[in-house]
Image 1 (tube, rainbow, N blue to C red):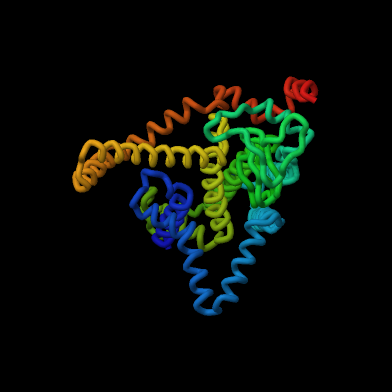
Image 2 (tube, helix red, strand yellow):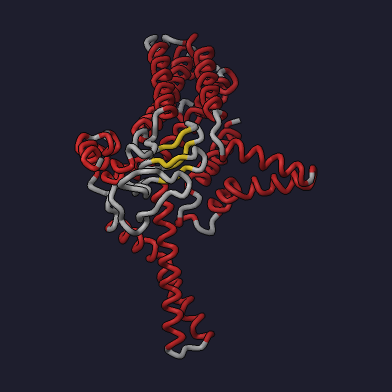
Length: 396
């Protein structure tokens, strides 16, 4: 049983790491990258092929129409799933664990603090889901244009062909905004569209989104530790270690006792063990997601801008390679010599090119004003500050 749990934990950890980090350069041409590709692309592609083979074109069209409805149109499905997960997890925890509270290591107060913690999490979920993310319209477009300057690299003055925001002074879309095809609106300081919230994450609700991630990470961690203390208390109260050493002759050491105690816990408190594993995995996922977005907030970057910079870097790299090839051809190099030269340069510059590009990006990020100012901009959005409101009134 203990080997099964160890193998299950290793497989689960590998899948989680592959899903979250498989696209990192450090994992290029490794099983981690292959698993990431399978989870994010190949599995669904194989599923579509299977449906086409069994049910034909009608089956594929049905799957694609369902995908379009749930992935490319606003719908509350993931919101309902979130509430179902939170409600069922809390119900199982209360039903299976509250009978052992108070225990040897945990007090009765945790019956009430856990309920309050869940309610706070749901409130943050509601705020993130239903708060205006910063919809750009004719009344506030000049306000957002004053707040965020154009860098003329990834943002330039251009009109949104979909919204076509009417304004006497400005007809172009503010910098750092993006038109969300799912919500069909332009959102200021657009980060991404979150299906779990059924809402965009933009200038005005990023703080709620970050609070949601942090609080749910702490909530899952709290649940994992609390249930762990309950189980440890049961081991202490029932004197399991004494029974194993005195009546079963087990060696009184961690190596000898740990597998036996774990085996007893899995057999006796399997629901609680499953809850611990589930909450621990979710806390790990939330920790990684929160760390990623915290890094974006500290550098005053959005997920949308991350992708824009990546595209810009790729384009500049292709232009540089084309210039090198043209210069080599002018110098009279043969095709074979050119291929060998490019291959040698590529091998030497592959590991350094991305690092250099990141340095250039960091130096040209107009919106990075230092960690403190960047975080204050998340908590107190620029468009809501009095100075920008006055600028907006003057322009009108």
